[in-house]
Length: 228
Length: 237
Image: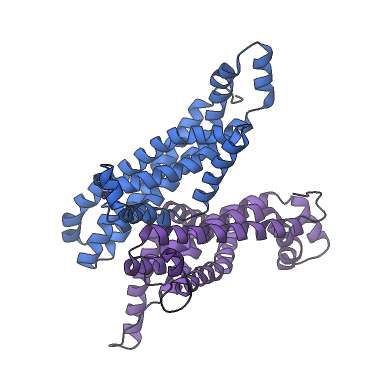
């Protein structure tokens, strides 16, 4: 252990960890809000709507997150006069904002597929039974299908959060000082390889905590349908 | 149109550079695949082993490399490998130095990540093969290695294919991360084009499109392979 480097960069790495957590949590929450209409669009009977939603999901899932981040962060520079005219340039020149925007758009596509899969996996009999009880389509979705779908979506959603934590490290390449960014900075100044290993430990701890919390959550939320 | 001219092949267009970058991206992904598959199969076998130590190592390997950001794994392999090799070289012949190739580091890093995920896919596929297959092979007098090669692996490939196909698509996208170490893949070449032409949105858009086309072609190929391997299993899909 190199204690000088630890003393100098340890606290900054923890600050970077906080930036990573901010980035991921904002993107996951905003992405979820965006994912619901996309998932519903995908399942819509309106051909145009469902094709648009499909195209969006396909395009996002078929391209690397890093390329998407470059497209937004550097690409915005090409529209600087227009963005300035619209009063939005201060947002797009900020790397953190561009990452939040990209990650939100990215996770929205993945989450849309998760929610769609979960909604389709709820047995048909559930909505048929609700219909025979005279519930309106709206309340069938809200009170019967959605709660069951949320349970099914729980596990893949946990995986998506983990993928987002890992994926968020590309923010470091567009100058955001998240955990990865601080680590790169520390390495370029000290050439001490240890910093990468500390970063590895911090990422592993984050992922492991999410995994444990999710196991616990699933265990608790499914206790009414577990046998003995 | 000026933008279209930027994509032409030749000295004033970026078409040939982008094509070379795309070709390198494809080569990197294709070179990583066999390495990642073999390592993944070995890790899966370790996790199924009767020897406790092997199981522990296999599980730890999976946990670590599935938990680390791919980017961090690439840096660790690239810089760590550099340091390690340097020490070995200095030990053997003091005074000389060594340079690690970006391509090889990228391949190892991506292969390690791929193997961590594929070992889980293989593990699931192993569970899909009934005990009877092993027992029948044994009663026919096949040695363990022959059983593996002639009976288990052919079935394993079919069962693992959907999961592996998914991992291939992820691998194709992850190659873009290697552009941060010294290797002229599609994304890095695009970055160079952007610096020269000052058309970031256009060029990164083209890069995204090229990745999308690679994914599409892969999907078509995967469907064809699945159909072929699924012959005689009553699955037309």
